[in-house]
Image (cartoon, rainbow, N blue to C red; front, side, top):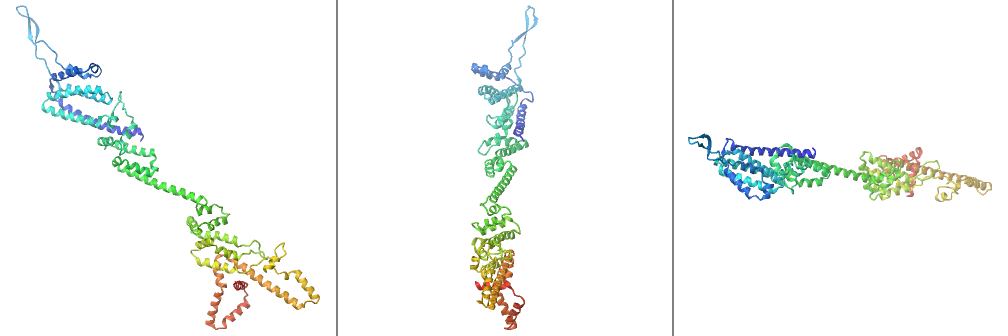
Length: 553
């Protein structure tokens, strides 16, 4: 409803209650003259005459009510005791007849009507603030009341007293100046209400520290009328909406606490408002949480998720480094996995981390056969780095043995020699010769020099051949072992889960355990025989490379 509709509904309910109370008063006064009682007005006329005489000239001209003249008109007219009959006697004189006695009574209803008019004038003057007119009109009302107390029979006096009591009660409930009921029902000249409809609802919907008497008077007179109740309830709802309290749970709670009396009459309204406030509070909390989460997830540096998502999908290495370089890498990893909420989140992050392993462990130039070369020392150091290791431990928390196998393989490969190019491009090869990765004695120039020494008789051909062949075999063995190291490293890099198989296959401790088992079962010669057969049928350069690496360490 609009404010005007709310106010009109409340006023209509109050006006109906007022009209009902007035009807009850009228019925009580009507009972006084229902049987046509007649009274002698002489006492009233005398009292009114005294009141007229006591009025100041200005008051008599401005404020003397018209009912005062009506009372004076009730005075019986004077007549001669005798009247002429129109006849004459024998002496030719008029014959006089005695006049009948004059009726000195008037209906009691005339006096009561006069009183009703006076009381209406007094109420109107008081409502208009014309206190002088109300005071003078009240004097004539007092004259009538005093007269009736003497003129009426005891039974009529009791009825009159009841009617006056009822009238005072109505006046106190609906007409007392300054009260909300009187202001809501007061009319202007022409009959329109003086108070605008939109102001009626707020006038009654008072807080606990306001004029609760107005609220209580409305509830006492029209508290059961649906128009009044709906108007009050809707006034509260409109006020809550206008203040925006539904979206302010704390302010709404305070507002409801300040209107305990009013809302006590509308428990269903309180429940609705409290439920709305609770829902708004939950929505506000959820909105703030969503905003905080959005800010946290979109502002790099505020969360691992935001830092990780700062980079596009083609910059996986940069994303991973935000985790490994975080202040608390383990916690950052946990947050990323938890935020992803995917069953494959851990595996996906492992894959991303392994891209960093590949990037850090690979060498810039390929080996002699064009294959990728790997730096075992860098890989070992990478997994020994505290931050990187913390991330790896969190990602392999469900399979720590697998991570331990990877670290063990990289530790073993750190001491092995990988393959290299025969000679770095555009270099003399001195650097590679110093590190043992390049042998100048096998170059064409060295071979030609050796042949000249043989032709001159400075070197035996057999010694030259044996020296060349031995050098070539040593280099060949080293190349095979180097390629095996590269192969192992590549396999571990490309398939981290292979680390356990490699350790199982090439672990010297495992070989020793097998040997002891065979010795216990087949005798002391069984391991030797199997080793000879294995060496003849299946030479494994990978095993030799690992054994070589183990020996060097």
